[in-house]
Amino acid sequence: MPLWLSGVIAFLVAFALAPRMRALAIKWKFVDLPNERKIHHDPLPLLGGAAMFAGILAVALVAFFWNNWLKTPYAGVMIGAILLFAIGILDDFFKTRGKDFSVSIRFGVQILSALLIPLFGGGIQGFTAPFGGHHFVAFSTVLSVVITVVWIVGVTNVFNFLDGVDGLAAGIAAISATTLFFIAIVKGDALSAWFAIAVTGAAVGFLRHNFYPARIIMGDAGSTVLGYLLGAIASVGAFKSATVISIGVPVLALGVPIFDAVVVVLARAKAGKPVYKPDQSHVHHRLLRAGLSQVQTVTVVYLISACFSLVSMIVLLLTR
Image 1 (tube, one colour):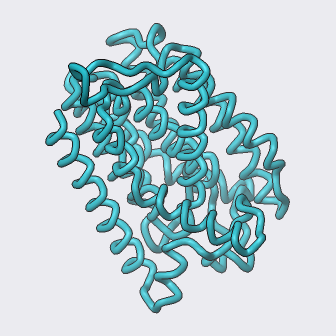
Image 2 (spheres, helix red, strand yellow):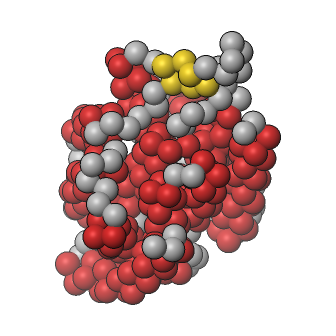
């Protein structure tokens, strides 16, 4: 099956469903309420994540009938994505009532979802050493599981942090997923390429309705699932057979959210604030305070992300 079909299916489903999800969100009053740390001043429909996730599920269903993936790590990836989507919808529901959902429960579900990947045979299992005949250095089972879980939970949360300006998280997800698609193609990993381009298609389809001025937003159900899928696809595909140098390729592919989160977490820790508590210290907030419009801010961050992705592709090709 042509890989481009995955992206087309996810795009069409997300694009078509977003307006319908918006109508339902307004009808059910499933809207994100403005507060002192958010930049929007009016309630915004929150079910955008459902439109994107429906696109990815449609692709997974087609892939299942074409080439059964239940015996691959992507079975764990999809179960984990369903769990995160469910807890994300619950978290978003609490937001619609002006309440905060339990951080510990959310974090626990993220860890469980990440654990499913090594349980189904995926994960970061080692690297190829550039010495001694380029032999593979395997991690112990415990170390492999720990590194995989830390990576996936980390990427899940940094994408959630990034969702603060119209069109930002969806656009960065599309750029990062396209980069992971390229990496999978180079490595000959068709299944990872199939799922990566599905994320691209779903994000772009939703972006049509989410770019400034946003008519619908993705909510935690969207941002955490996007982050989880990107981290999972990288752990299953991009890290496979990575060398000491190219092990940084997936990190660069997700460079903007990762480096933004590192700076923010360090700043919060230095100020004695809880690292998980949202504020306005992210790069997009800084650009807005510098006088850039939302469109200009998003464009600048897109360009930075594209540069990170280009560097990751160059590093991958030079280290093959």
